[in-house]
Image 1 (cartoon, one colour):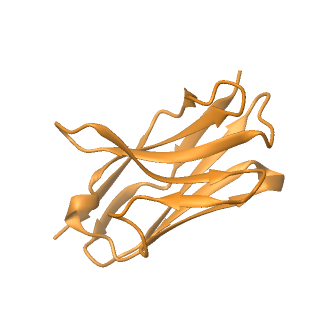
Image 2: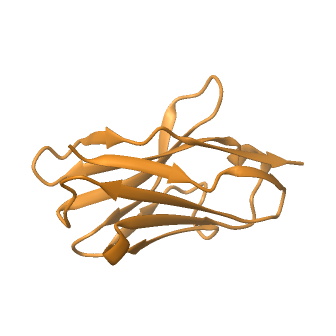
Length: 119
């Protein structure tokens, strides 16, 4: 099955930048949509960005629009989340997930990577 692995999290000062990577392996193909989610302590897991591998279309939550950018290196089966102008409220565990065109649900998840933004 599809496996996902995130990397790139860490501690950064407010206003700084981080780039998260999500590497896919297994029977991953272009019919998937990749989403980046985050979950802060005591809060629900929310989607922050998504990318449709076929069309290249992207979506962003209002809270990150204009600061975060989702992109892909299709040859390497990697999806990136460039995060700029980070705020303390961006602190969370960030997950990437894959949604197939068949099930239309995010069935595959990575283990998550911690992002901490210090004020």
